[in-house]
Picture 1 (cartoon, rainbow, N blue to C red):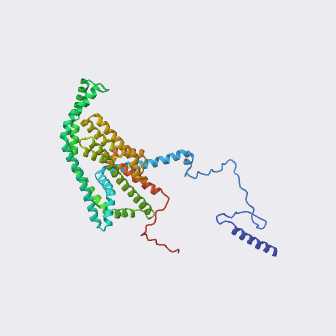
Picture 2: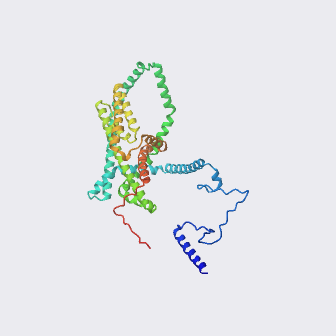
Picture 3: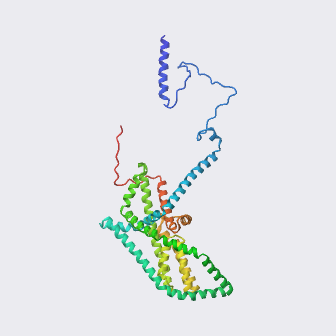
Length: 426
């Protein structure tokens, strides 16, 4: 009896030691016998003849049907339906934007205008001017500058039309002589036939041109409404932009607010840098081409320079098209030699802009690959015409900055006015 009690005591102590040494997630083996721990012998595993062992399912599938589908096909199917969902959402977004484009376009223009004028408003605020007064002063000054420039352009154009009309006949005669004596060697009959075809084309499409003019006249009210909306939206963006942004950020989950706020402010800085750099580059282009127009005494030098300035807001193609108008005017007014010189000036200015001015002024903050610019311009023209071409590249620059900030793993800096509340452990 004493020896049995001794063995039972030793067996209990051994089981306690074993339980302490074993990790908590490892189950204790049942049905094992040892010399120090008597117990039932382990039951041998039974083998059933004629029955296959059950296969373990794939860790990434929920049924045997999914397990029988090849892995590459499952991945392709997963990507496919997700891309379809994204495409449907994008298509619906484009439809909504096109439906309310009369509101979206003025708001986009107001954002660009606000990004351009925000530094001026900030400078007036630093000299202790009230926010509403500073915003109104900047908007009125900008509007006066635009109206004054347009007035000078229109007056210059009206003043130079008679002179250009008088010289256009001589220029056209020079062009006809060059077509006859030049490498083409066109005869009078060929020229008359081409002129008749052009006149016939104009006569056949007279209704289309007239309807286009009537539709343009019909949209005058929409243009005026959009202009008023641009002014009001720009005023409130400049005055209450920070308040509006904070309200929008508060609608998001708490965990995402700081990340979205950091991406949004970085995108706004990128938009401002892009707009100001574009204005500076456009001004340099207009001055460079305008100086040569004045040197060669080309009519409409100031209006053509203003057209180059406005065309520079459409990247890559805008300034080239506006410069082509200057080349045509030089061809009609002064002949092919002067037109070739102006063409060389336009190409040279474009090269200086693309390789020196834009990389130097815009910098890496708004650096976009030329292929992305071309694709964005094409998509913008298809979706919204000239307005889409104006908004496409700034939108790409903003999205580029926002995606980079959101994809970054670094945590944004804590705002200086943030209050951190620490809870005590229970």
